[in-house]
Length: 128
Image 1 (cartoon, rainbow, N blue to C red):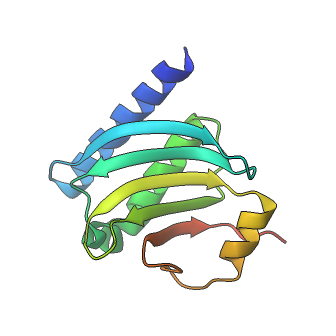
Image 2: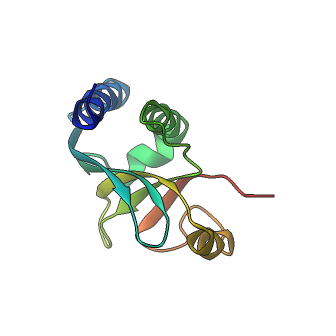
């Protein structure tokens, strides 16, 4: 299976799981794998129809589904988060990231679910 076929399959499966969980139309309009210059890598899934309240209520399930999707893409998800549209309840994207050392330190210093107004942390694996 090609990279794009794997992304497409996993995007579709996650979209179905979220629709069934939330009982409403949720669209995962794009799924991208990335490798940043700093050393971070992972996947970003642009969303429509997913709201902040959905995360608060179904966080455990959404986190589990996102982790499974990441593992299917051979991404060891040490940092799962949602990117919020500032000033709204809209979720712009779901993200799975393997953090580089510098970015890890930036997030390790923070606390709580919302270290910044545009980020809602679903899972952060602290290093020992």
